[in-house]
Every structure is written in C-alpha cells, then in structure tokens.
Image (cartoon, one colour):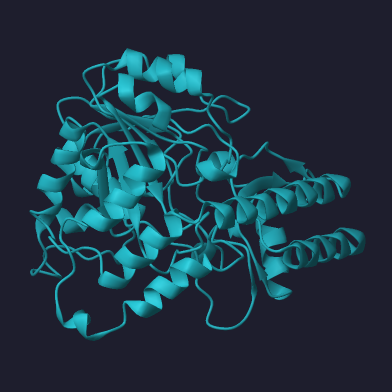
Length: 385
C-alpha cells in the first residue's frame, strides 16, 4: 500500500546530474524488450496519487473539495454540440484572451496547454539550457526530475534548509535555469517575492520557472514581476483553486519570446492539445472572480481549523500557503498513520522513499466534514495507542 501512495524520489536529497535510478531485477532490458527506444529504459516515471475505485475520504491529491464555477459548468455543457466534429482552436485564442485580461497582460504573453504538467514539460524542453544543470529543490514536485530524464536535461537538486525553507543564496551558481514551485510542492511553504526577484537577478540569461499551482491559497504571485524580467515564466493551473482538475487546463505567463519557445515545442508535438469543452470552460472559470474568492476563503478557513486540530493532538505542522499541509507526529510513523487512516477509509499521501519527509503525511484540505473525520480518526488512534 505504501508504494501505491508513495512517490519514488529516492536520492533527490543529493545533487545529481543525469543519474538514472537503480532498477529492480525485473526491470525490462534491451534484450527482453527489443521494441523500446533506448531512452525508455532509464525512465523512472512519476507516480500520481491514488484515484480510488470506491468512495473514500480522499485527501491525497490536492484536488478542490468543491465543484467548479457554475459559469464554467454551463460553458462546458453548452460546448457539447455539433461543432465537436471540428478541431478546436490550435491557438486557444479565446482562452488566452480571457487569461490576459485577468492579469493585465498582452495575449502574446499567454500560453495554454493540457494541464500545467504539459505546460511544464514544454517549458523544460524549450526553455532550460542543457549546457549546465537545471536547479530545483530536493523536496519539490516529483515531475521535475522525470522531465529532466525524459529530455536528457542535466539537473542538480538544491537541499532545503532544515526547516524546509528555500535559501535562494544556494542558487547563486551556474545553471541551465531554475525551477521553483511556490508554494513549494510537498511542503506548502511559500517563497517571498523578494526572493524570487533575487533569483531572477542571479540568472539574467537563464529562464526562471515559477510553478504557481497553489499560489491562490496564500502566496505572493510573481506575475507582477513579468514586466521587468523577460527571463521569468509563471506556470499556473485550473486544477486546484478553480476545481477543474478533470478538465486538464494549464497556462504559462511570460515574455513573448518565452511564449514563442513554448509554442514551437507544442506545435512540434500536438497542435490541438485543448478540447473545445476545455477552452470554453476554462475561459468562463477565470472570469468568475467572485466564485474563486469565495472558494479559496472556504479552503483557507478549513486549513486553519485542521492545523489547529492536528496541533491539539500533538502533531507538528509546517506553515502552509497551499491547499494541503505537511504534518507529522513525534511518536508515530507516517507509514503507521497512513495505514490506519486507510483502514478508516481515509487516504492521505505518504512519501516513504523520500528520506527527508518519510515521517510526514501530506494532507489535502477537504471539506470541514472531511477534515473533522480525519481528526476524529487520528484522535481515536492516538488514544488507543
């Protein structure tokens, strides 16, 4: 079960450069599978959070506990007409215009893709130089090293401080570019905007990618820095605060030259990545500011209550600006707690193969009722133990 809930990032606490992970004895070889391209054998794919096949209290994949904007749902339903026989707009112009209007940018500064994962993959391929290692934290989104392996991009991981914060001075070195999630994936800790500015100044001729998947829940967005920093790419998603994880829409904001690089890669891979329903639904969603503000406020309130409840029963919780928290109990292993919760039909995320956070649980902020069910279960377990 731990393997199903975990993320195999063993060794990311140490700098590495094009170092393939150790493979189990049964791993396919060129002799046993002569059909694969040689690059496939060394891939160590990202393991997504479990999508259960039966009803559970699902607090493991940082989805929104609430549905999307009613305006988005109406637009999606309206798109289901005879025009589905036609390809969607390959430039996603209507959606890009809506995003540009939201942020006060030119449409040439907006790129849209099939979820932020695809946008990030294009950014790794197009905008990171391969004559020096890309830099990102040792604890962060697990797809970053996967992209590097897939694209043969050298990289080095930069250890977080002992309190899991980023020290930007550690990034003052030669690089092929810098990639940061803000708030950081797995920890939820936000990076101050002044630190982002410092990174941009350190790497004026390299791309700095700021992955803002969780920024709406309490961090400072770097979008305001775009005007003065042509090397900044901000990547965002409709999967978290917009409640549209099932629609698969992400986007990037940056200088026209960075966006052109992304378009070149996209059009060399798939010119039609977004469906008509996705384009219409996302455009309606981003314009519904009132719904977004209300939903984010509900999640922030639930987060505060969950943190207080966990601390009351002895948990240590990292300060989170995301829609999840990272928590541990000094007297109980994360594996034990994850297994117990699974027995109570509650699933959270555990990272047994990542040494620095193997004793921590990552818990998505659910509804108040879901969070209370988690707290009640944990309190029962601690009492019985």
